[in-house]
Figure 1 (cartoon, helix red, strand yellow):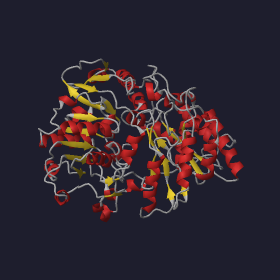
Figure 2 (cartoon, helix red, strand yellow):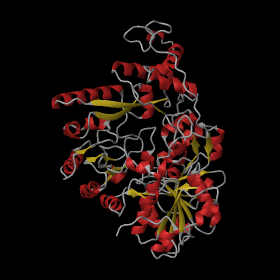
Figure 3 (cartoon, rainbow, N blue to C red):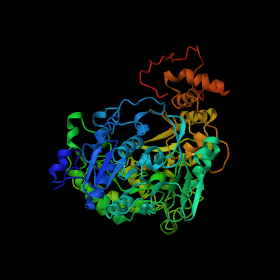
Figure 4 (tube, rainbow, N blue to C red):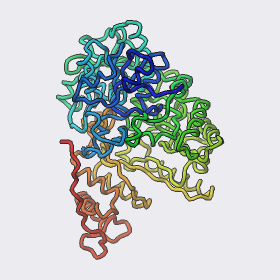
Length: 616
């Protein structure tokens, strides 16, 4: 019979266990669902026959609280959770968030800043002789010397901060099996230092061929070395040709082994077919549950990886550029489980992954030789070798629509419209508009200024305009009224005030005002974050403009919502500062009216004082 993994001593004893093999410490509340990394890793270990218990959000000011489930036999595993803990805690404005969706009841403050490092350090102090292994998105993207936006400083590798014995980067299922079997067989930590997809600290350089990237000291001395470190490290990320990467930290060397090979379809199916309860632990019911589950509860993951490689996103660094997909049979099986869940009303909310319409490798060469080292699949234009075929995805969607109990299947994860248009068959666009959206399709051109798009790694404005036309024509052909909802990012590295005004003019011309505006967040591990900190483009070595001042960022953000009365003063200041007073007045091309004009309908808006805490 399926049951939740134990999270209390009583639940461990109820299973007849005297001790755990592995104690998994998580910065999130326990949600037993395949979209939650801690649950996946624990279920993988359980399927291997290991006794695993989860200690969720323990008090970090009471080290003994880590011992409430008992000392594990083999190792302590630590993850900060599904998101980087700093992103969970703070907004782009460095203001404390009011809600933590990965905590029961949305309560904030249930995990520390830099949760992975804090928990791992405590575990190592409590049980010095036990191996401590860290993993998850926070560990994965902070494995080298990195920039922390919220603290506005360079930090050492999380391996040094955490005192962990081993770091698993990437999704982790392959590595955790290997690590567990080695530990169960009595192997030493040194015996595991060759495992792909792991990193560790060493006093000595490796004996095999390696690539050395600029050290902590070199980066502290010169910001440009941070850009160079990113460039060198990212070029070794492919499992087929990537070498060992070495970086001198504050004391020891950080040694990263090559990444794991892509999972086969059978391996993907095996992971997603495990006995998940697909719910939060019942102990959270009285607190209102865990909100993060609601976003994915009736959605299906069809693939992993992303060859879009947008500069502001680190998914491809975590999941890889080579797509790994599940079989139709596995996805259909999960869909039938969704249909039986309480609260299912006939709507599958999503079928996708990091990019919904990436269902197979970008080209067949990737499966043998890896992703190209010095070029992208879609930028600056789709590669001639790209296999932009949506037929398999369309067949999967058709099978899901045909299931008894399913009223509609939505696609809500990102659609790469440039990849869609590279498909000579328009069947997917037809099916998308006919069956899989409900009035609105969200897409992400992110910007329209060429200088900014070149730093983002996104297609040009002409590609977006062409897709707008195709989308409108298809909906007219189908006799339906549906609309595009484009997403844009403000203050991305490379975006000047004039670029922001250019975007505002584009929004005026297409008669669109975003309801929400996303300011660029420099999260660890992305190309854009390397640009933000270093003010250099790692790929070219050229200097990059970065809007750092909060007021400058506020002006860029306000321009995207220039019609809002509360933004009038900022937009007026931005246009005046940029010498674009031609956009102030009564003309059709103007963004705002002149101050004091009788036609100036906006009134000065005094924003209420923000009482939330701002990180210093």
